[in-house]
Length: 248
Image (tube, rainbow, N blue to C red):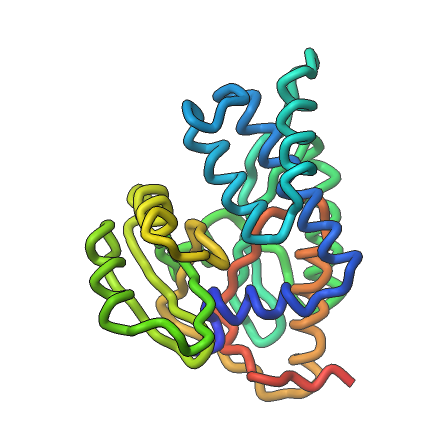
């Protein structure tokens, strides 16, 4: 895997500021609220809510916070009007970017995103301008401290429906069909694995390298701005990220 890997993005978020982590909690709370409205507050009967809870736990959201989010959504008589909108654009050096949002004000969200792209050397494009460069895949990440046996993990992963297993120095990336993600995640959890992430991701078919140090800084700032926006749920790109970008 090169710099576009899901694990690299997760590590990047793990090193984020407390403010950025709070933004992650806010995004997950919004997803939980939508899931409860759509399928009810019982995760046993609501697969989407089970997915949200698993995501919350992987991001270290306390159980009490998760329970409060579910109860608040279940007790609210106001129907939310959130809609899922995907935006596409180009970052510095033509890096392809896909931004998945959950918003109650599409004009606000579009304006914010256009501002970020313009400010940091990119531009927001039309639907379809970069999505053909990506393929949806289910991606499960297990942090690897060196104690996991590669052959056993592979056997367990394939046993629950995975298509591929890739061992990295400090993580194991397991891929599957998007529709199989829930079964793979729940199957691995049942086998005792602790997952760092389990999500449907946009995987690029090609990557783009940025050679200008100033544009590397701008690309990092673009990603930071997008990820810190409360309406943005996921950001995918085909930038072959350097291991230690110079942001000074």
